[in-house]
Image (cartoon, rainbow, N blue to C red; front, side, top):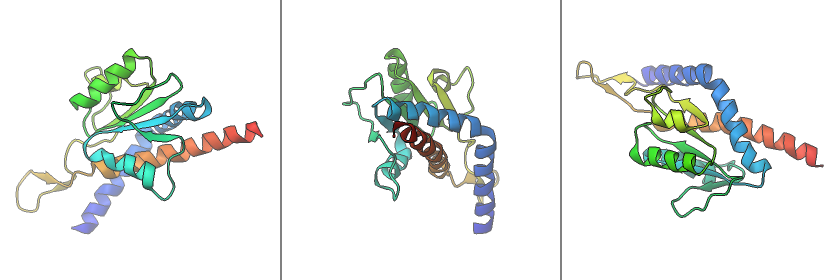
Length: 179
C-alpha cells in the first residue's frame, strides 16, 4: 500500500508543479513586496493548514519577514497575507478574504478547489493556487468507491516550500541591490 501512496503523492505534487508554477512565482512576488517594502508577510492558516505556519515559524529554515496572522493584527498597506485553507468554501477564510479585499491589502490564497467565478476565495485573491485535491487519493481497501488519505497539508507544505524558494531568491536579489 505504501508504494501506491508514494506514486499517488508523487503524481499530485507533479500536477501542482506543472499547473501552478506561474501562480507560485506570482505569489512569491506578491509576498516579496512586503519584505522589500518594510512590511510583514502574514500566514492565515485554517484547520490542519496551521502546520504550514508552524513550519514557517519553527522549521529548520524559517520564512523571512513572517508572522502568524490573528484577528488582533493591525495590517499596514505594506503587509501581505497568504491564506492556506483546505477548502475555498471555508467560511472563516472567505470572511478574511472579504475583509482584506475591502481594506485593499493584497493577498494570496491556497485551497483545494479550482479557481472559478463560483469560487469566491479565488475571485478575491490577487493570486490563487489550487492544490488539485477533490478528496482522498487512495481507494479504501474494503469499501468500494470510498477514497482515503487526504494529503491537503502535504500538498500545502509543497506549495509553501516552492513559494519560499522563489521568495528567498527574490529578496536576496533585492539585498544585492542595497549594497
